[in-house]
Length: 202
Image 1: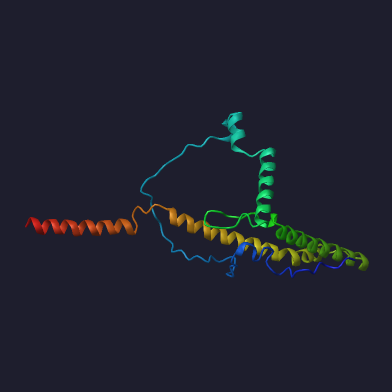
Image 2: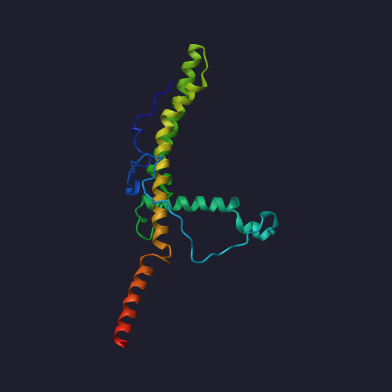
């Protein structure tokens, strides 16, 4: 039986400190961004008619979905960009994001391969042990796999949660402020101006 790969402790994040990402330590089922519950109504309502995909022309279908060539081109672009990251020619900044390239870098690919090998090896060792002892238990095999796949799943959830927070922050920064602080400030300024005009007219 082959020993488990022990180069790195797999309990560490599979992409732990790649690209200087911060680790979120809050429970995954709780939101780390507290939001008050409220109902709001937009000042402008826009509706859009959407065609059923059966009503698309051949050209519209081609323009709407990725085909095999598109997927191949995207993978090649990701490989090229990951090489630039490895060479420090592409670095994260306010204008450049390397998010999604983590597993394409040398370190990311090495960690991904190691995580897979650990999980596969654990499963095959468990199967071998069961065969030697003359029994078969699917749950024990699943547990052996889970012991090595769970840290990867937790890391993926943490990255997803971090992306969610970043997307919400970006959305909040770009959302038009129809009736927010600027609107209220304008009303206060307007009332001060009208009071000034009324007193000068008197």
